[in-house]
Length: 113
Length: 109
Image 1 (spheres, rainbow over the protein chains, first blue to last red):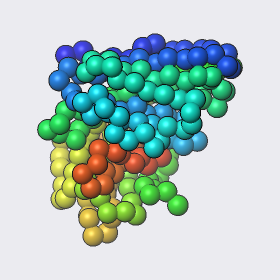
Image 2: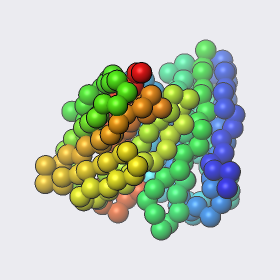
Image 3: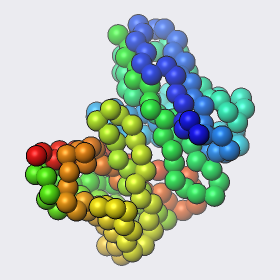
Image 4: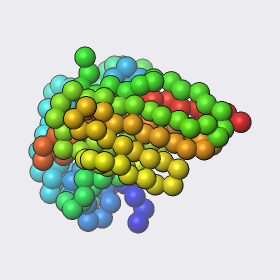
């Protein structure tokens, strides 16, 4: 299996622009997680889905952030409008219902100037 | 105070040394995870444990539920063990993980 796939791997954008991050979970996994990692705060859960349904979005910073999972093999995290403080590495992870072990994608490094 | 505290924050060791990384947490948990983040950024799961001890190669993880404490040990450390090691806890039946801030390990020749 290819593992969790994220795109793009790097994104540089200007403040105010819309940013869309993409994730393809491991086939057969029914949980998908979006995390953000910064030097100051470490890894934080933003939102997670089970069977394409958002279960806990309490970590989403504000209304500028939104996440969707239209089907079992694809999810997006959108920031609109982006701000410099959104600069971070965003990870997607997935797992299946029979194990709590999560598999992480390579991350997307976002820089907002 | 963070729910999950790790120590030390940074650790430098010479090849061959025995290494211990500690994780303390303040809430009741259903399981604790140890993760490794490579210098390139990728994150892999090392252990998931709710009691006792687990071993995989040169890595050993232990947990004491009563004391709310876990340790990750590396025997015969090697430069390829250089990474950030992250502790995370899961509570109840939820899937949500709460992370420590990580321990940056560098193993030199």
